[in-house]
Amino acid sequence: MSGIFGCLGLDPVRHLPLMEAAMLHWGQDGGCLWHDDACGLGQRLLFNTPEALHERLPRWVEDARLAITAEARLDNRAELCDLFAIPASERLTTPDSDLIVRAFLKWGEACPDHLLGDWSFAIWQPDARKLFVARDHHGNTSLYYWQQGERFAFASDPAALYAIGAPRRLDELYLAQVLVSWSAYHGPQTIDLDIRRLPPAHAMTVTPQGIRTWQYWRLEDTPEVRLARPEEYVAGFLEVYDRAVRDRLRSYRPVGVTLSGGLDS
Image (cartoon, rainbow, N blue to C red; front, side, top):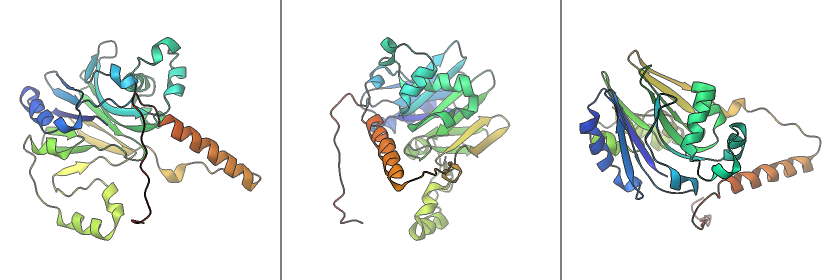
C-alpha cells in the first residue's frame, strides 16, 4: 500500500519534506506534496491496482473545494461506479481516490460506511477549516497522529511524526498491556505516550475547536442472518467468500499467495 501524511498548524513548506523523507520506503512509484496556508498533505505512491496507475495524490478538487490524500484499495468499486453512473469506458482510469471524493460529497462524514476495502484517507476543507480523517473497518491500513497545542500531524508511519519533532516517550503501561493481551494493540494508545493511533472503523475531524473522534462501525451491530437449512449457510458463505477473494485480486501484476504451514499456530 501507499503511505500518507499531513499537518495542520505547522509550516507545510518546512515540515512536509521532512515527513516525506521519513516515508520514502512506503512508495517506490513516486510522491507528491500539496499545501495551502493552513494545511499540508502528502503521499508516497505504490502502484498495486490497474487504477492506481492513474492516481495522483494529494490533489485539489476545485469543484468540491477540498483537497484529498489517500492510501486505498476499494473492494466495492463496481457498486460505487454503478451508483455514481461512471461509464464503463472511464472505470479503468478512475482511481479509488476519485470514488472516495464522490462518496464524501454524497454522504459527508458518513461516507466510511459505504467504502469497503483497505483504506485510510484525509480530506481538507479550507472554507470550513476542517480536516476529516478516516480508517477502514478492520484496520488493514495504519494511521497515527500527534497533537501539541494547535499543532497536529498524521501519518501512516510514526517515523514521519518523529521527523518533525514528536517526542519519544515510552508508554510502559501500554507495553505491559500488549504483552498480556493483544486486544490493547487495536486501541488509540501506542508504545509512545505522545503518539496516538486512529483505531479501526473510526473517523475524526480536526478543527480550531479541537479533535472529535468516533466509531462508525461495530462488528456486533452486523445484522444476524437466519436461514432455513444448514446447506443454505454453506452456499451463502461460499458466495460471499468467492466474491471477497475475487474483489481483492484486482492487480496490474501477477498475484502471489503465501500460506501458513501451521507451525506458528
